[in-house]
Amino acid sequence: MENVTLYSSDVVLCEKEDHPDSYLAKFIICDFSRNGNGISLDRETAENWISTLKNKPLVGKIQMKYDGTYDFTGHNMKKVTKKDENGNKYETVEFDTSAFGSFTDVHIEEIDNTEYIVAECEIWKRFTKACEIILSRIEDSTLHTSWEISVEKSKKKLVNGLMTKVVESGRFI
Image (tube, rainbow, N blue to C red; front, side, top):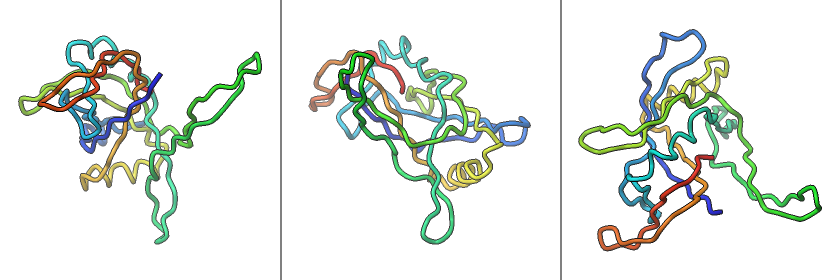
């Protein structure tokens, strides 16, 4: 099974003070056009599997920078080799991240005449440093996100004259 990564920098803070335990945010994941990595999601089949993001954690890793401030680090995913119960080796991925919230809904929404996959998230206020960074980066429009999808079925086809991998089904991981 292959994993693909999508990137986005569109996050909207929906409610900042109305909930005592969390901030509510809307993450605009992607539209259905071909991205810079030559990948697109099939609009006709996406509604069958995008719900796999629901109840998944919002994760990141915070580190102190050279100037004493804190920020999120990069992707923090690594391949590791493990053994199953029969002693057979297999490769999997591990994340060196912590959870700061969870996704409560995912759907397709039209924004400015374009359809997008949009995920709603609760960001837990008890993780104050993560919240400070997230809120500041949303305000500055500098919060960049990545989304990993384990591809279950895809096809290659020409999109605007360019060969494109079109994901027909998968799971958000």
